[in-house]
Image (cartoon, rainbow, N blue to C red; front, side):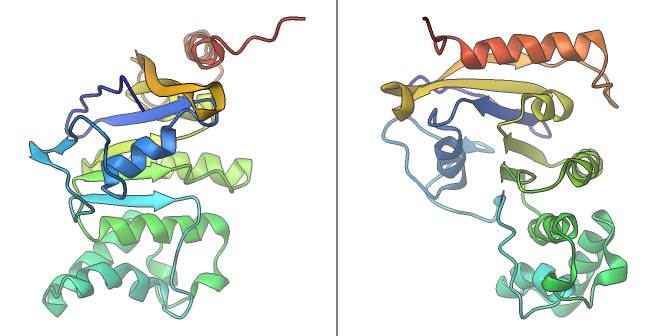
Length: 236
């Protein structure tokens, strides 16, 4: 990647969009500390990122739950690994369960849950670690349209109540406009023969809850779609 400069405020919700191969997921892995930037620096709360840390949590499209643990045990795993007191582990687990609306299934196993409920468990598991930043890589990509819509609303509520900073990678421009305070449009990458870079950062500026049928919403969608496809036009 090259030419990637982004300042994200505490508590902000930022979506990253762009064509395949432009570096969206690479950017997220660098923010998570899974990969090292070839140049430049990444800072969270003023501290440089030198690797994975408890201040950042990642949610992938693949839920990554432990099938042999119950919902509550999956959520409690991180705090237990951090050797927190049992009372603190239980308090965080219960708070995360209630945050995603799954208290009634805390004793169920992942295979007994729908895809949407499993993704809620994955989100609750990272919330129990009390991260400052939530990094999400196409987390709703495998869900059906109705479940995806419900999870978008759920994530907005969690973001509002927990005050966590969210960086959310998606291929869906509509999802980005619905969720984000700002949309980062990336371009280039290996698929286009040049380094991935930020083409433009678009402020959304629409009140929540957003009407996806409104002229303002769809004008933003068209603008971002044009930015994503800029330079990719096929001539006869």
